[in-house]
Amino acid sequence: MPNKNFTVQNLASKDKVKICFKVNSAECRLEVPATYTLLDILRYELKLTGTKEGCGMGECGACTVIMDKSLAAACLVLASTLDGREVLTIEGISALETARPIIEAFAVKAATQCGFCTPGMVVSAYYLLTKYKNPTDEQILEGLSGNICRCTGYVKIIEAVKQAAKEMAAPKEARSNA
Amino acid sequence: MLRNFSVLTPESLKETLYVINNLNVSFKFLSGGTDVLVRLKDNPGYADVLVDISRLSELSKIEEHKNTYVIGSGVKHEAMLSYAPFVEKYAGLIDAVSAIGSPQIRALASIGGNIANASPAGDSIPALMSYNAEIELRSHDSNRIVKLEDLFTGPGKTVLNKNEIITQVILPKSEGYKSGWKRLGQRRGMAISKVSAAVNLSFIKHPNGSRKLTDIKIALGAVAPKVIRAYETERFMLEEQNVTASMLKRACAIIEKEASPITDVRSNALYRSKMCGVLLCDIVNRLVFNA
Image (cartoon, rainbow over all chains, first blue to last red; front, side, top):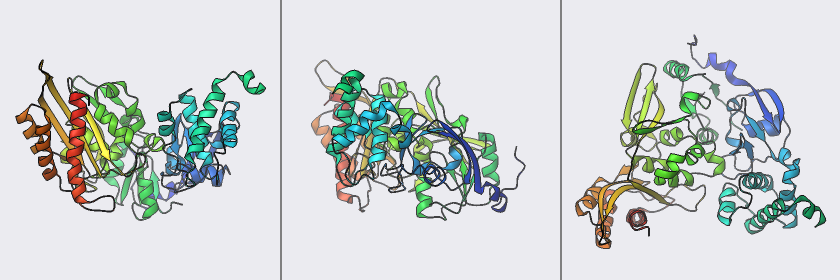
């Protein structure tokens, strides 16, 4: 049993938290303010600014990352809950050979307008396509349902995901010859 | 950026119960964080301390018992969606949980959090209520079980004492029942329900094609200060037994009166009342006639 007198003063030491977690396969040991979210840590501590802050309330999906094999809104993950977790950001995904078809499809299909939602969209698309090799329209809509594009360019984004699925299903040689 | 709070990370449920019993400042539990962090952003005075219970293994399991399924309060919505017995036998719960938030939110948000928020529009609540779910509450020196419908006292308000925590949701097994949940919202993703309804029923199919109800439980969300059971409608339908268009029409008239909705930015009271009947018919027809 902890022998502590729980008052605000005594809690001061908890205003910073020590965490150890993985970001894009690299181990990170950090001491950060307890009020930091994963999004703050990525952008301010680790300078991984590909993950965007849109609404800051979990509604827009611009800060989407993959955490422990699930999608997560980085703005809603508090530092203290990160210890031992594994996070994959848009920077990690864009370095993966397997994700190239997604990024290329977004470019080819002009699925990017202002571009602010794009990193989050690509993370969700990558997650979707690792889960379903050949997703149905319904699965694509559901998979992207947590990502809002305020340029409202959804049609192109959905086309890009379909195109990427096709590319990823095709044998590698056929792709390089295309 | 968030500011002005401290975080405590107890390492066990026992330690958590000790901590909350001794805290003399305003605190909130941090489980999934999908509501707490949003409220802290809006209102920095929302809590002085967050008690981080997100890692407590005692709260993060789903267990099958003889007559019940016991869901730890820290279980994520996503985990419920991939739990085979729920997918097979609790369609209403799956309907509701899969409509909450977005994939990004469902991976973080916990069932205990959805309940503890005590929102009249909380989507998992009517579904759980339609199975007669119960909630286990624990403090350092007590352990009690309350019916889910008795947990709430008003919008955002529960019977929880300051030193208590929701530890489990107890879901009775309901063999031979069919269930469904449906809502109306502004859109499909990331929307707060305007009206929601959950139905859990059993019936006998007669050779002449008629369907006789043997049991029905109906819960309504977002049409009263808390999620409610539509007891009068249930009674009427059980007395009538035979599911027909005219029986459903009369059930609609009753359920519209059982609801006591408000007019707000999302919808108006008249529409909400009427839609209780529409949702009831939709779900019952689907469950009973596969329509």
